[in-house]
Image (cartoon, rainbow, N blue to C red; front, side):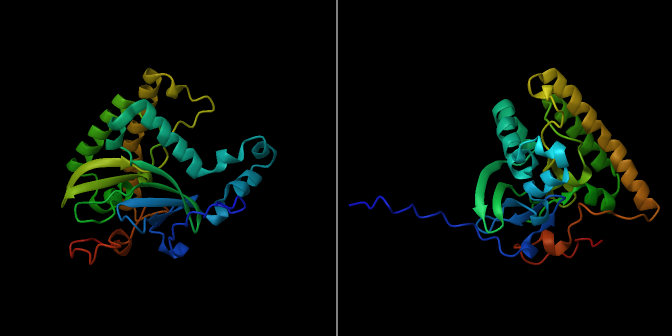
Length: 253
């Protein structure tokens, strides 16, 4: 006989360990390696950037918006679902696959592919790759191919930032693709790009073209011994977490 007073056993939370286990940190979220699957990433909200805190910062304007609009995980999950519905498998060459939300010891987590290189290392950001290797012909060709494809498909994004794109290698110094890991979705108040593929392609083209200016600006900083900045750098110990010793050829900052 079933006791109707018994409540269902809650699903166990995914234990990501302490916050220090995060291999990367963005402006609003922490990124962890999935403890049960090293080729998946779990994104959780930073405790100092929770939706209620971000909403409060906006004052009256913030109170007029839904709290969910301040939740980066929920917004990104909705965007992934919409991209999958509108663009299908063709989008997965340029963005990670999304596996949905899970409960973690750091709150709700969004699970996506973790982009890794041929040797198991977490792929560098485009910002870090260009900082180390420069604007080589190989980089230029890869970016040109990415720009053409991004425009052709018309994928939705905010500004394409160098630290939100990773360079996946299929062999030493062989770039197989660029993957946009953050900043997806239209930022417009009225995002007509979702309903007009022609408009989406035009918007995507403008955003992809700006990568050239961003790379040139980064190289100017490098040439003048300027500051790297906050986002986009991963130390070797972070990139090779869980895959043993890093190759001797891995370059340090």
